[in-house]
Image (cartoon, rainbow, N blue to C red):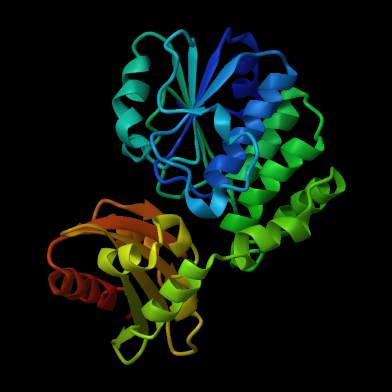
Length: 321
């Protein structure tokens, strides 16, 4: 069932205890929208837990409040709410926990991905620059005033998913919310440094290695990079350090679709896609059971590297017409 943010706010206010979930391998928007909502519930005196199966990626360890994140809910909550997760499977190890709860309690899904499957009992899906925009409006409906802590979390997600206000889904509303967050005390300079500029030596070395081996196809309209596990282990790099890598090949002037192939383990690759002007990479990702946004999406591919590359390259060709 589709519901409004006002209806969700009413359900949250009636809850005795809430469990907040977000997708596995969380990014800034996942953490930002969820932790901001958790703070708002704190202000209202509504007990809540924040649940995620994954370790905190290294690029987001600067965030405060990460110690409240648990691997699973406590079990005594009466409402489950998933933030920034396009489908139930994206909750990873917590998928069955979340979906099974619908038999005895309310589950809510608040998201901004065009590919959202409406997997909860109650769903609010509003496609926009970042789910932190939906979280912002939900916090407004709860009647909680913005403070520096909440604003800081929301701006993390807004900066992350808007590409530092550079993606083509950035609107007047995106910028207006950003302005309000800065006005409430969010430190945009510090966050831009932490999210887009700061990097350990291992990341710099990995970046140089990966980009020097960038490959092209389809008259240079498709560019892709491969981030292999052996090199990461050699350099002491982790998955969090690869955030943003896929944006570099997209900036090549001839390129319409860019891809990053991150080796998760032998025979398994996490594919991140970006497009520049016309290609719908959400539909492309959907071919392999993934999804996301028109200009940014992802999915998993399995097989030997060159087999994966051939499969991906063929599919990309269908979206470069």
